[in-house]
Length: 268
Ligand SMILES: [Zn+2]
Ligand SMILES: [Zn+2]
Image (cartoon, rainbow, N blue to C red):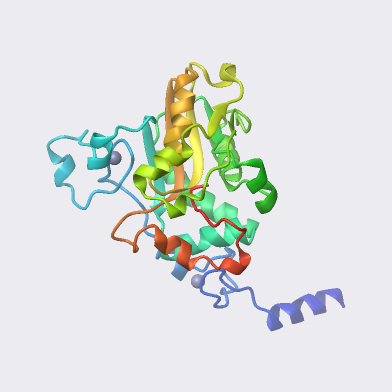
């Protein structure tokens, strides 16, 4: 009888793709249909060897493989290298929002599979740590999405996870409302290394969900370097790329405010 009910429920309520809401074919097991998933724009070479910003053509790296983007030349970041798996737009932006604000935890395996190839491009590291959330925001959101990603990376690399190595010591205004210069200022002094012994002399991978201007991860890298970290590699699921969507404001406008905690900033 119970089995019959389950079949009946499956027929009445087919599993739907969390992005396009169409019924997922019975032979597919993922929460996102293959049509949607194949539309995710993966970030590959050519890209800036420092911040990972994609270049429009190979020309920039043809004669000088270490050619950095304009932003990195103007203001060299505190991290050693950053890479992102995909462009923050369309399906990927939607999937991240579903995961983060609607707590769609079933998305973690598919997001992890996306993160893998980006992780493989980073040099070897000794430990993995997430960008911490402020305790108040953690209470609002109930989970730190960066910690989930960092745990996935730690398991995959078989390297220790340092969930408390960094802490957020100051509340910051949502980054979404600020321009690039003010973002760096806004997060200045927002983080502290809890136990320098954990990170000194080590190469670490710092994990976050979205790289917007890099101000948040840059500030984390700055305090880690001051604590003696040998190298900070930044790994993010997605990255804002100008030209792929209408600037930073676009993110905020497309977030369904009814399901989002008070501050809808993407760069937490
Ligand atoms: Zn779909
Ligand atoms: Zn760059």
